Length: 168
Image (tube, rainbow, N blue to C red; front, side, top):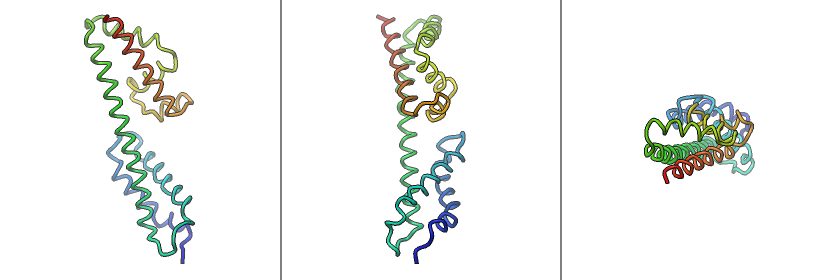
């Protein structure tokens, strides 16, 4: 007999949450519980969308773990990509800034940041000075995460170009 979907949620929610907590809990320090709960909810949403396609003799628990693992790996991959992008941008900005005389580099960088378009300046400030992640920036500015990421990227690109131009 096929169990009701609600029964699967009641039976496996805490177990899936604990599994995701172990996979993702050390990934980020802030708001881990909320993030894991969001991913747990995503797991059950995906499960619900595909529930009627399962065979009656399916192992529902293993199926939920498979979905949870896929969601967790996607999240970990996204976090890794964000970290790598941030390192590239931070290293490029540090290289450009280090080539200027020390006292003028901070003043010049501050002036260049102030000259950025408002949204780029806000996104850059939130990301690198306030340590917000892209979802928090997007929520704060009423835009998508992709837009927040693009604005940070464009701001860094402009700063790098302006700093390199100042060296020439």
